[in-house]
Image (cartoon, rainbow, N blue to C red; front, top):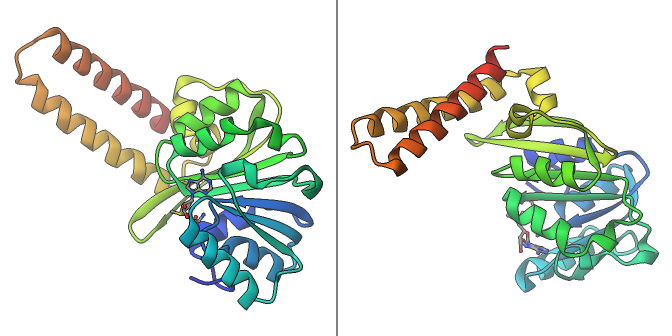
Length: 232
Ligand code: SAM
């Protein structure tokens, strides 16, 4: 991967950036995503935020090497603190972290989202907590994607301001992903079901303590929820 040729995962994130957007990429590491967006002419200006010194220095070097210092500002900052009001950022991308870390970044400096109309979030795990955060904070799911790369399955969530209602199954699996029912989506939830059924079978033999009973009930409910959603 480099600034000209992104991974499939980051390319999917990039595909949801509106042309002409002003983007902040938080946790940018090498700043490949903002460099790619500017090279492609999709965005004119971007901010790359990084909290760790090593990746921050990689981002600074990359932007310099690509000759993009006039278009991309690299800032060493914690999460959304990389965004300044005068940037007029309208799109934020946060990719390659767990869902809970993405949510904690969104919650720490909510004032930085004032001018933002689109969030493109790519959790490596636990996308569910992002959907819960969106529901509670006036964001609605515009689109979702699911892809496989290097034997890992990733979800990308695109949010815009607005309200939505989601069922329990839609919070876990994603309303747009349920509607699309792609092969990779079925594969992901097929693996989860297999795993839960295996755990359920193994604890079925265990003594029925109240903890075991609760775990059994939890697994059975999850299995029924996911089976219902993917077989609808
Ligand atoms: N976004 C790139 C991608 O998707 O390929 C890099 C992902 S990398 C696994 C996660 C990056 O997020 C690391 O460089 C890490 O230092 C950075 N990071 C983690 N927490 C952060 C925070 N609170 N603020 C800014 N950057 C953060």
